[in-house]
Image (tube, rainbow, N blue to C red; front, side, top):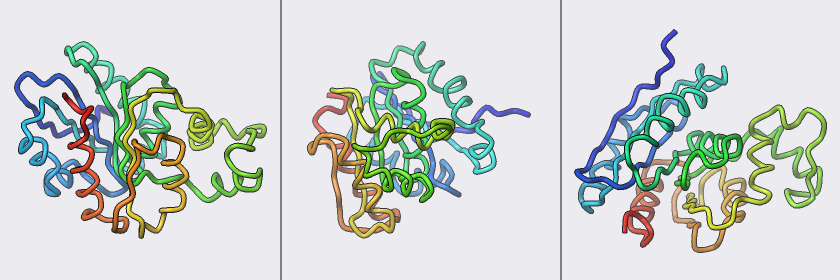
Length: 216
């Protein structure tokens, strides 16, 4: 079986940075294009390449998506001369991005998390029963689950690690997203009007692209 992920790329002459975007559930790379994500980069003339990745739920559930991401996209990108490589995504793509940096410290130089899905209720409820994230100590077997490993990483994210995390205040997962956002400095997080939908994600993308630390 060929597990090399399908991608769509926006390239810019003399790009110094790369952002790899992972999709939400049932989302394709073409959805990023249709929503104007690539056009917004071009409009700003940012020296930024963007790679949107296609992952289906079967590949994700089988645990094959993130190894393919590392082997076929991130590792080759390191040899292409980029000054900085960031990883990000929408909803499930945001969760996958967090899971990947938790398991592979140093694999990327920053995160762009748009409405990151906080994981299953089984995971978040177990942490709540322990008294919240600060009090939670992993029980036997929990760290076999990548979601628990993600939350363990979020207990103490690396200092000075560049992150942008945003979500819609009316998002049905907003409470869990806020919990993720609060693990990072206030200047790195943003809540906007909107739900779990493209209008909110487009607005967050615009804010991310306008950040002073991006490609400056």
